[in-house]
Every structure is written in C-alpha cells, then in structure tokens.
Amino acid sequence: MPLPILVTAAVIINEKKELFLARRKKGDDQGDLWELPGGKIEHHERPDKCLEREISEELDMKIHAVKPFNFVYWEYSNKRILLMAYFCKILSGAPKTIDCSDFGFFDARSIRENQIKLAPADIPLVDEILERGLIL
Image: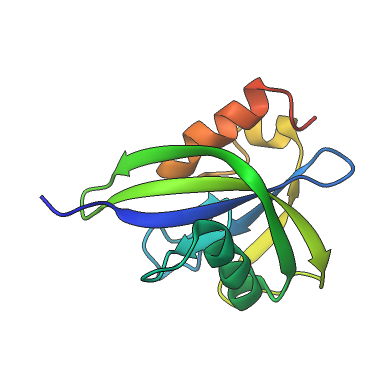
C-alpha cells in the first residue's frame, strides 16, 4: 500500500476569533466543499514552507506558518492523506480567488449550524478548533 499523500492546512484566526476557510472549485476533488486552505508537499519541501507557498499561489497572501496545530490521517475512496495543520498569521495581501471559488472568515455558530459544508478530512481539525474555543 503506498504512503499517504502529505498535505498541509492553514489555521488562520482573525482578531474577531473567526476562522478563515476556502471553498474548493466545483470541478476539483472534494469540489464545492469548504476547507482549511493549503496543499500538497513537494519533494524535499518542509511542511511550513509548503503552506506558505501554497497560500501565496492559491490566495495571493503572504503568511507565516507559526507552529503546528495538529494532524489528521484520512482515507478517501481514491486516496489517503496525512493532513498537517499549522497555526498561521497573515503577513500581507488580501485574499483572492485564484485557486478556490470563495473564501471567508467564519464564526463558530455558522460552522456549528452546518451552514458550511466541510471537506471530510478537515472536520476533525475544525471540531478541535471549536472544542478548544479558539473561535467564537
């Protein structure tokens, strides 16, 4: 069995204690679902540097991956992933929909009331963010 695909995810929480999520494009794998933005680690790339590169490419924002948050191993029908999430801080730039269909900051209520349909691998991470009271 091949090793899981290594993927990163950014946990970006603003001063209002809202969580930044991006919506995948309709035609993509897990299309139209919301996720913690990030992407696949390239050969010999550090996870934190991958995350900074991916956010720049996908959203045109410069971020700093401050420290690890948690990880999730997830099996989809067509692949297995190891999703490594980092607490991140926006350094500059306003997000743009370069490689996503939408984005935004969301409070705990809108996420809990299922107004946001999350990609399955992201659910355990977002649940932990909610349980720890990191967003309001």
